Structure formats: structure tokens, C-alpha cells
Length: 83
Image (cartoon, rainbow, N blue to C red; front, side):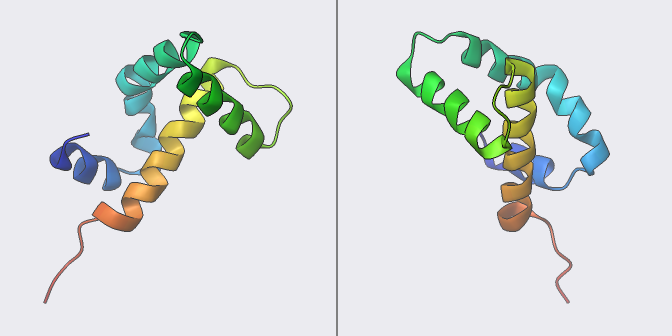
């Protein structure tokens, strides 16, 4: 993810995460559905484990991944006022 996208993502309001679901979430769901790759299988299993439920569909996993991405980017890429 390019730096400017990381900064924009870090600085959006939580309610605006739904906007990311339309494009980035759709892409993540596509990757998760492609279960032929071991990395995607592991990522999906990790989402289920970290989410705390026995089962999860690809849309829930994509939502969880986006929320975690946003939380982590807020820690490292949030714009702050410098005096």
C-alpha cells in the first residue's frame, strides 16, 4: 500500500471504513476465496481464531482485516499537529 494511501486510511473516521469495504474489502474477499494459496488459507484461519468465533465467512474476514489494518495504521500513520 503506498504511503499516501496508508496516511489517508489512518486518518479516516471509523464510520468511513464502509467506503473501504466497497473496493479494498471486495479485493480481500476475492483473495480469501482463492483458497488454493496456502497464505490465504492461513490468513483466513488466523482471522477466525483472532475474531473469536468458530466460523466466519469471507466478508466477515475481510471486514476484520480492514479494521485491524486501520487500527494499526492509526498508530503509525496518523497525522498529528506539530507546534
